[in-house]
Every structure is written in C-alpha cells, then in structure tokens.
Length: 405
Image (cartoon, rainbow, N blue to C red; front, side, top):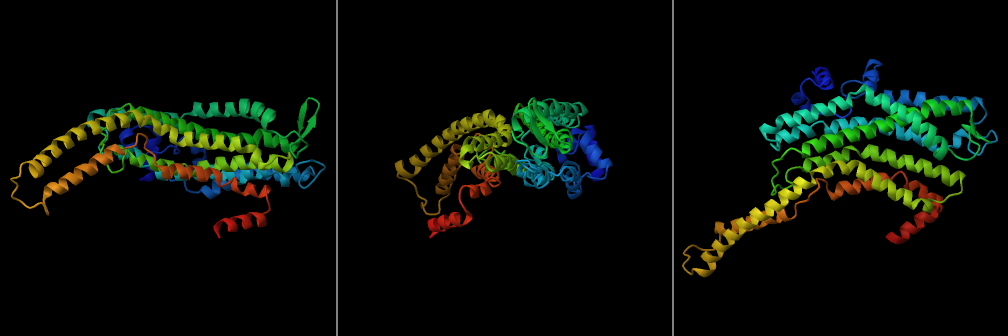
C-alpha cells in the first residue's frame, strides 16, 4: 500500500490522493537511485545505512589519503587532517543531520496539505487550484533537470569560486599547499575538492531547492481564497497547523549552526581569531535560518490581515448591538423580572467579549513565539561549545554558579 502511494505521488497522476501524504523529499533522481541501491525505501527508513555510505564516500577516503601522504597528524603542515575540525564537523555531523532532516520533514509535514481540506479552508470550487499547486510541487521535486542544474552550480560556483577563493585556509593544510599562483591540491585535496565537497554542497543545495518548492507551493495556496475564521482559538484563523512545519526543519537548522561552528573553529584554532570577532556572522546566520524556515509562511499575511480586519469590524458590530440590548434590558428599563444570578445574558456577554479578544489577538503570520525561540536555540547550540575558547571550563562554571547562587 505504501509503495503504491509513493509511486502515485512520484508520478503526480492523482494530486488529490497525493495530498493525503504530501512529501517534499520522496522524489527526485537521487531518491530513486538510493531506492535502487537499497539505501532507502518509501518510508525513508534505512537512514543509518545512508549516513554510513555517505561517510564512506565523503570522509573515509580523506582519512586514508591523508594518512598515506603523511599529513594525518603533522606532516609539516599548519592544519593536519586529524585536527581539521571543520572537515570532521561537515562530514560527520552536518551531513548526517541533512539525512536525518529528510525523515523528520517527511513525517511531520506529510499531513499538512490534507489539513487544508480537513479544516474546510479550501472551498470545493477551488479544490482544483489546490490540486494544481500539489502537482506543480511534485513536478519540481521529481525534476531531473533541476538536480542536474544543482550539480552544475556546485562545481561551477560552489567549488571553483566560493571554496577555492573564499573558504580554503590560506595556509599549508592536509589538502593543499600554498603556491605562487594560488595553491596546489594534494591527492586527498583532489578527492576533497571534486568528490566530498561537491557531494556535501549538492545535498545542502538540494535542501534549499526543496524549501523553494515549499515556498512556491504555499504562495500558490495563499492565492486561493481561504475560509479563515477570525475567532479560531489558534489565533491565526485556523492556519495554526502550519506553525508545526517550523519544528520539522529543526535538524536542518542544527546543521547550519554546526556548519558555522566548524568554520569558526578553524579560524579560532588556526588563524588566531576569537569567537567575539564573529558576532555579525552568528547574527546573520540566525536571520538567514529564520527567513529560510519562517519566510515561506509570510505569504499568508495578507489574507490573515484581511480576515482580522473583517473580524474586528463584524464582531465589533455584533458586540455593539448586543451590549446596547444588554444595557437597555438590565440597566435602563427597570422592569426586568428575572434574577441576574445565573442569567444566560451574563454568560453570553462574557463569551462575546472573549471572542472579540481572540479576534483582536489574531496574528497575521502563522508561527508562534515558541517556534521562533526554538529556531534560535537550535542555531546557537552547536556554537555554544566555542565559548570555551574564550575562557577555561572551570572559570566558566564558576561564573555560572556565581550567577545562580
């Protein structure tokens, strides 16, 4: 049953059926290759096997080649392989997180699209527009051309420009030796620059592509008139379920934090930099990941804003009429025979006030403060250990205990 559903979703034959099990990750040439190699299945299990194989391709050859060249521990270079924190973090921490993120995103987002129908947010007359958006997302997700373009971008920009000119350390390392015309790659450096790094950058760029697919899908859905209810208790008109998608991207955010932490560690350990020198980079990363995850949800702001204004106007008018009638009955007429204690009028007045407060507190972006806080924490967690480069652990613990006690 699961295999049939996955094949249907991959082909895009029935968008309505695919909406019941929407997935950003169950598709594409690499996914099909992994399935044929028995490194994945329709449920994205076997992730330990995928992580192991990717590590064998990206990291293990570097270890072996660096050992053979004598640059594992020393070799007369400033950065031997064993002490290159950035490389180990990139391939042994960030790469597994990118794989884990696929399973988390798949599991936590698979029912998001069907929720639009379950909550009757999309009218039957607009169901075809929702189906069209789903089909478009699947076509992009399964595109062979898109992944080929990503590979071309990785080699043309990521390796030839970004890494060679901006990211590689200006010192003798296990992968390169400075020369008059630039640097000369070692055998390990050739594998690093033309196999390991491209593989890593491709997986990372593929995640950016998936986020773009997700953003485009949400933009198309936001063009559909949604049946938003201003008094919905989630305070976003019934779109509160979209906030859960933020938690799905936490492993991806952790990967970005670890990636920056590895790069900063190299600069701190081998270039004499201090963690405080990178305050701007850390801030920019936090802004980037928030925009990456929360940005796609901003497309619903216009509809939510209109729904809030309409709710305030309509419930304000309703409240005005009710409180006038309440005032006239209980305070002005002087002829009320029923006791006020236990009267339904009092409860109705309170309920109406609560409903108006819900409308007034309605947010125009379907994301909670807790989700935003979790994104910030997930970004900073990998960077926190670098605080130990500013002061010894004993001194840090003393200061923490001094603050607490």
